[in-house]
Image (tube, rainbow, N blue to C red; front, side):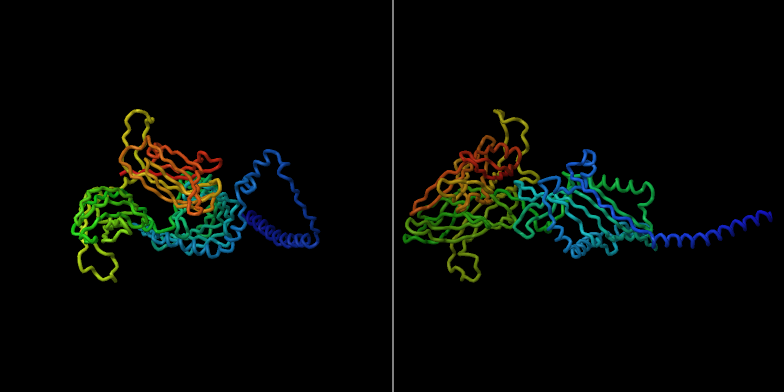
Amino acid sequence: MSKKKDMGFVITFIGILGFCIGVPIGLAVGFFFFIYSEPKDGVVPVVIPLQEFDRDTLLSALPYIPNWVKSPDHDRVDWLNKFVLNMWPYLDRAICNMIKSKAKPKQFDFIGKYKIAIYLENPSLGTLPPIFYGMTAYETNEKQLVLEPAIRWAGNPNIVFAVKFMSAKIRIQLVDVQIFANLRIHLEPLVPTFPCFESLVVSLLEQPHVDFGLKVLGGDVMSIPGLYRLIQETIKKQVTSLYHWPKSYKFPIFDQSTVAKPVGGILYVKVIRAMRLWKIDLLGTSDPYVKLRLSNVKRTLGKTSIKNRTLNPKWNEDFKLFVKDPETQVLELQVYDWDKFGGDDYMGMQVVPLNQLTPHEKKIFTLDLLKNFDVNDSPDKKPRGQLVVELTFDPFKLGRQGSDSIDRSLSDAPIICESGALLVNVISAKDVEGEQHTNAYAQIVYRGEIKKTRTIKRNWNPWWDEHFTYIVDEPLLHEKLYIKIFSESRTCGFTRKDSAGFVEISLADVVNNGRVNEIYDLIDSEYGIVHVKLVWQTI
């Protein structure tokens, strides 16, 4: 036993002695080489053009080449990177505040029997902004803008999740984040209110690259063998399954309660009669008729016949009006006295708010005619009479913009088509060429009824974006709509009109699909095109 103790003491002594001698010698040798060794000349990297690479080398280098180099459709956006770099300190705070406001209501969603809480602690995205490696913009027929940016972010964020369990508190820190992604961004629909689009829809074009560190109690959890690859692959698969095109995530820009689209419909108006109207003519009678309008619509939408020499006319005439928003629009009824010579005399008016109507129910109104609704005007000393109308509002069906799809071909077999409204949106035309001028307008012809857009002067590429409505009771599967483009000029009081082409549109596609948004080549025009959007809505 004494020999073993002596040997152990000797080994320990020798080890300590070797350590004490070896460390100074090692430091001295290292210092000597550091001071007196001569640095080698730097090696200049060899630059090899891409065309000299072989196939395998090119394939391995392809992921690291920016998209604006690989594809001519991608634009180099250095200006955008400079903008983001300068704005990043403010964007960092704005984004983090938005994240905190979204996460705050969910801090204590996990409170239960064991009182667990999860919340964010002053997150920061760091000082390194994401970099755009190119972007492509696409034009579509819809009111939207489509962007496809390639984004790479190797950031230094400091995002800390605090987990409270009973009285203990554990912090989980997210660090060294790397995200490489090719996105598709839809700005839709475009609206005339800043920032000019209602929502931002984002989706992935391919599986993203995601890498990050995760520290718990000061230690990096991702350094555990096998855990790193498991977490990375799981995140990639989950994100791809949720947001890979055509799946997407929608970021609303406006308050959705303010942009909720109203359910339009068709207003059926029956002008029945009027009673005790004013005496306008010298013989103590009048020749009354009624004009119909809807608020937010400039033009007159209907007009009754003229009843000669009566103060109690009876019309019993029916009208159908297209309604965009029954919650805010009102029906305006104006009574006039017809004059053979000169302008017609105004007799009175009244309005009916459409929100007073119950869908699909008829309601009769007996309206006292007024001069106007200006409270500053003195009231009438004598009643202007009364107008009796019957109103029915039929809203369009929700969840569809057309009748059910018809699988059968268009043949002699009977096809049932519901009544509804055909909405025609003449958006624009290009390369419109008149013989001597280009003051272009579009003419819409359906079942002999002609409507026209405003005239755009001295422009080969007119933009109208005007809407027209045709209310239809009978099937229009075999009907056609004609859009004719004209160019006109006025000289010495005479108007000259030249045809710049036309297009014939079969309405069967509109009924079957609910909507058609196409650019058509103009017939009898060398290069002209017209952009038309058609929507079929049923009641």
